[in-house]
Image 1 (tube, one colour):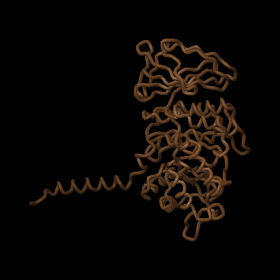
Image 2 (cartoon, rainbow, N blue to C red):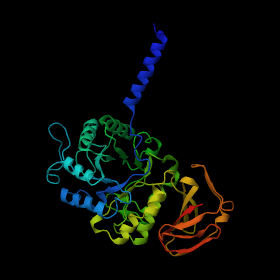
Image 3 (cartoon, helix red, strand yellow):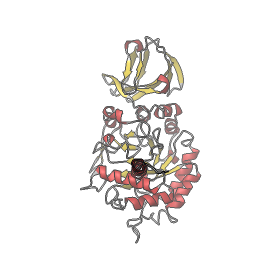
Image 4 (spheres, rainbow, N blue to C red):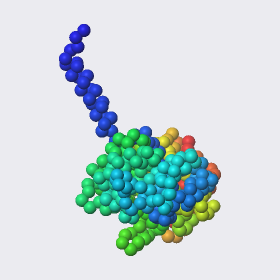
Length: 407
């Protein structure tokens, strides 16, 4: 039987399109359907890391309840590699810090039921001066795959003359070509508005410069400034439409347990959960207080962050230092965070029936005259009534009350 030549051409074209689609596919779409949760070495240890310290951190990660609370990734930041590539151009783990190489440590992480993340940079050098990836994207991606890497944080230092979109797309394609599913974290500090172009490139992208352990005020670090929790918060509301399952705005790592006051840590964690932010702890897990552990492992707050609807909160109300952030949730539920940033204790009296909440982004609406919701305080871990009565409470300075509203 003869085949119509036009049909043959059409079939060949379809096969070509299918192959090309696979060839040029970038990120692994199935990853990070909820914001990634993990721990990163930088905030506490910078480059002062070695195998015994990190193994101890992995052990504590598991024994402290972090793993049971949903934290999955153990991410090794800058400073893990030797100062030079080997004769074949491969990155090499620092032999003093990792005498038996990186694969041994990756295997240790995996044996504990965790996933392993690593760091490099789009530039010629990392931020700490170690070999960057520029010009070695495919080689480095193959090496990471051979080690069993599950997560790559990709920074933006030493990038003069480099096009950000091109650089991150190239690394994304390299990861895909290496064949091992890895979360790709774009850490270019929001300078080139990655929320506009990175949805198909990576699973998360930094939306601001680096965070510091300050709640209200930025912290001068000499040559640069670490941003406060509230400074970063104020930059999130306008970009919430770009986030969702598989592609997240990243307001940077958590500073919980790194020197802020308890109420500030609690507010910081609450706001990041409301923002559907990746939750990447950065404290010394071996030394964390019971209060710090209770914050980081509050499963009811984490459930807001991990809600499958994947919608970021927005600032619904602001007056005299009091802000109300609302986060639509699956099953027509709602997260509500009352934030007091006034610098003094304030009494909040909020009549639910006076305020209809509509969110065009998630196509949800909440009219408390039509529907009654139960109120659950997620820090006190108790039910506190319903929306039939006004919510009234004194909120300390730099603190929050977080409620979950269910029918």
